[in-house]
Image: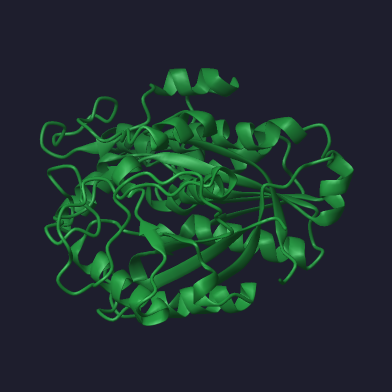
Length: 399
C-alpha cells in the first residue's frame, strides 16, 4: 500500500456527543441528536428539526477557556481541536505542525446579531469590529489559541470542505512538508443557513431518512471534527500508536449544477474511483462506505448510482450517519472521518437510522442494524457538495 499520513488521535463535538467517546456510545445506542431548535433562535423552531450541540456559547467557551464572544463555529472548532491535540500538545513542540480547518458559515451567528444595527448606522460602522466573522478568521482564532503557527489554512468547498482539508494535510505530510497536521472542520447553525436551505426546499420537516425511497430532505446540524495526522518520524518521536492511515483521497467536480449532483453521479464516481487508485485498492477491498447520504432526492439517487457503477453487484456495507448528526455542512467530512476511524478501531458499522423502504432506482440496501466485532480494514467516506465539488477519503487500518 502507498505510504500515508498516520492518524494518531481524533476530536469531535456534535449533536450526539461532546467528545469521541460520547459519540461512540451514541452510535452504539442508535441515539440521534435531531430535534426542536433550542439554542438557535429561529422562526422555524417548531417546524424544522435541527441537530444542535447541546450547549450555550458560554458553556462551549468554558470547555476550553476561550472567549465566549467568539463565533459559535470557532467555539465548536476549539473543543474538537483540543481533544485531538491534548495527548500530544507537548510532544509535538519543535515539529512542523499545520492546521487545516474547514467551514462554510464562519461567524454568521454574530453577523446576524448585529446586521440590523449595521444597516441602520452604516456610516458609523468600524469594519475592524467584525473581522472575526470571516471564515478564515474562525480558523485563525483557534490556531492562535493553541499556538498552531507552522501552516494555517481555511478551506470552504461546501459539504466537501473538511474532506479537502484532510486531503491537503495528508498530501503535505506525504511530501515531507509537515510533520504533524490537525485537519477537519467546523460549522454552527445559523438563521442564514436554515433559511437558505429552506428556500431551496430540501429540508425535512420530520426526522430525515437517508437512502429511503420516501426520503423528503435533510436535517441541518452543527459540530466539529478533526483528526491528528503524523508522519512516520513524528509518530516515532511522539511515541504515538497510530489508529489508521489516510490511504486514499480524491477530489472531482462534475460542474452539473450549483446545488445538485449530476443524475448519474459523474463527480461521485471520479472521486471514489480515484481515491481507490491512490490507495492502490480494488472495490472488493472496501469493507464499509460512510455514505454522504443527506436524505435529499437528488443526492441519494446520484450517490447510489455512482456506488453501484463502481461496486456493481458487490456493494459493501454502507450507511449514512447524517441520520444521527444531521448535515453539518463544512464539518460533515471531519465528523464522519472520526466515525470512519471509530469503525476501524472498534470493528463497527453503524445502522442507517429510520430506513424503511428500498429506493426505486438504487438496488443496494443500507445497513439497518448495528454490526460489531467486524474486521474493518478499509473505510470509504464520501462528501459531495454544492457546485458539484465531490471528495472521497479512504481510511485504512495500520498493518
